[in-house]
Each structure stands twice: as C-alpha cells, then as structure tokens.
Amino acid sequence: MSGVEIRELEVFLALAQELHFGRAGERLYVSQSRVSQLLRSLESRIGAPLVERTSRRVSLTPLGESFLAALRPAYDALRATVDDARATARGMGGTLRIGFQGTVDDYLSQAIARFGDRYPDCAIDIVEIPLSDPFGPLRRQEVDCAVVLLPVAEDDLVLGPVFSRQPQTLAVSVRHPFAARDTLSAEELADCRLIGIDGNAPAYWRQAQAPDHTPGGLPVPAGPSVNTLQEGLSLTAADRGAMLLCRSTADYHGRRDSLTFVPVQGLPDSELGLVRPRARPSPQSEAFAEALTRTTTTP
Image (cartoon, rainbow, N blue to C red):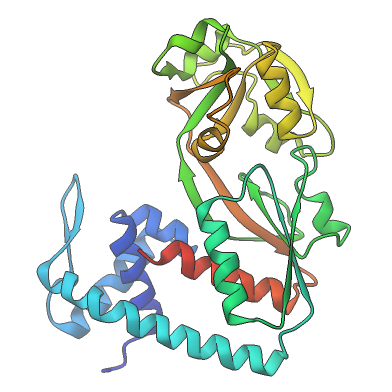
C-alpha cells in the first residue's frame, strides 16, 4: 500500500463523516493541523485530491466518494479482525457494567448490541447513574465505564469517544410563558429560574449543565437543585423552574402533557462521552469503547 498509515485512513474516514477539519480532529483527539497533514500525506500517496476545501465548506471529490465506498467495509473488516484476536487473547467473559445518565440514545443502544454480538460470553448490565454524581460510580467501582454529559476534566478518568453532539433545549411547564415559543435565545435564560444539579458533581460540570450567567453576562436566577433527571422533570412540570436538556432527552420525554421543550439558540451543543478509569481499565470496558467508536464513526 505504498507505506500508507492506518492513521491517514482514520483521518479520511472521520473527515468524510464530519466534513469539518476541526470536528474530525476532536473525534480522533488530534489537532486540526494534524488532520490536514495526514490528509495531504494520503492524497500524495494516492496521487489526487480526495477532499475539496473552500472557506465555507468541505466536500469529497468524486475520487474521494469512490475511495470512501471501497475503504469503509475494508477498514471495518480489519478492525473486526483485530478485535476478535484481542478478545481471544483476553478470554472476553465476565460482566460489563455500563453507567448512563438520562436516556440510552441510539448510538449507545447500537454500541451495546454490537458489543453483545461480538462478545456473546460477556454479560452486560446497564446501570442508570444520578446526574448529581456522574463520576462517583466509576470511582466506587460500581460500573466499569459510564456515558456522561460533557465536560469531563478528571485526571483519573479517560475520556473517549465523544459523540451525540446535539442542540440544547429548555424544558418548561406548559403553563410557563416560554411554552408557546418556537425558539429562545440564550440571553432569555435570564428570565427564568434554572433548575440546578445537587450532590457530588464537580462545580465546573454543574455550571455547564445549569449556567448561572448567559453568554452575554446576564445573571440566570437559580431554581431548586435536584439529584436525578426525574426529579428535575417533576419540578419542571410543577412550574418550579426550567431545565436545560439535550435534544434526544427532550424527544424521549416529549409526550408528557405537562411539559414542553423549546430549542435554545446561542448555547454550546450538548455532547456525551464515554469515561473509564485511567489506572484500572477493564478489558471489557476497553472493548466497549472500541464498539462505541465504530458505531459513532460509521455513517
């Protein structure tokens, strides 16, 4: 293959999905300049451009489209071969305990199914963890890995993959003045009481889920604090405050007669990430991280 490196192929696959150099770099935990460097190297080996880049958009060339169609199944087969050999060497059995917050979205459910198909001798336990303690179950060894809302800045935990980037919505009671709105600006959060998160979650994490200021610097009134998502939704339905939620959680709970969910413009998107202990990662959790990576990078 003329010395082609697997990282060059991974960069191309990530870029083909994201169509954005920065997001491709985030997905692979490399800089945007490194993405450009690896892509140029791959294009040099092939002898023609695979990607068209302008100031406004990124797209695949016709050669890039055909190369992607041929590469994806070959790459997936290569990864599957490596994973199977690794599982055989590890004797993959036992139990994988996966913690999650809120709802099990499509990415997570697909990754669980993929892992189960690949490692049928490994049992899978799905454990809901409270909003108020996103990292505690990992540190107490109650779960092997956990899917939590970002940000994650914990030295003893490994983060990745990151997935499910979605706009944020504001959950409000049907009696709330915002309930009739189609959208809100982030600055309008100053006009409602925002439900916070109690417990052992780090301050930076609680601030990200329930900011006390708008992006423009206006103070956001504090509402009651909760430990679980269900507590927050119950207080919201009782018109005790409003709660920021990602789009998938809003869609999951959207049929409640007492709540409505209004998109908020001007806030950073919500993202989920898989975290696991840095010092004692289990073979099962590492294999699940690989399964989740494949799920989130397969178009």
